[in-house]
Length: 147
Image (cartoon, helix red, strand yellow):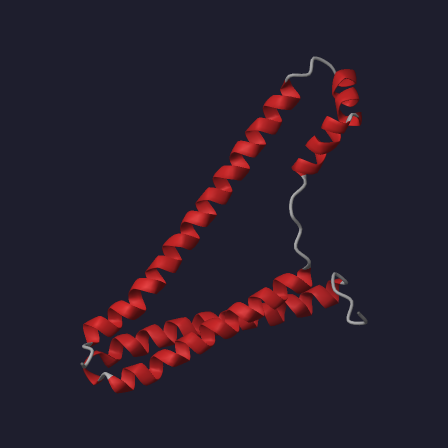
């Protein structure tokens, strides 16, 4: 049974659309969670009538937990750069994989080539961004090359 170009395009486009929508929903949910968390912390601090009550609270176990919940996750620069390199390589190879598909399906080749070029360009931009981030981080002393 031979697959038509519409079926193949559906097999490619639908997963990509699903991933993009899932990523947008994740970003939205993270932003909403952070907003609600911030509002909760603000209301908790407003409950104290004076500074001494707040100081006593912050010295307690509950206050210690509260302070820990305020902390923002910090990702090390090397981890962020490595993550960007990984994304760049994956996007680059996915983009390159569209080019042979364009050669196989000549009637819709322009769509495959366009998708391949856009995704490959995205991968290259991740790699260039990683390289620039690494160079600036070492120049500014954020990353030591000795380690």
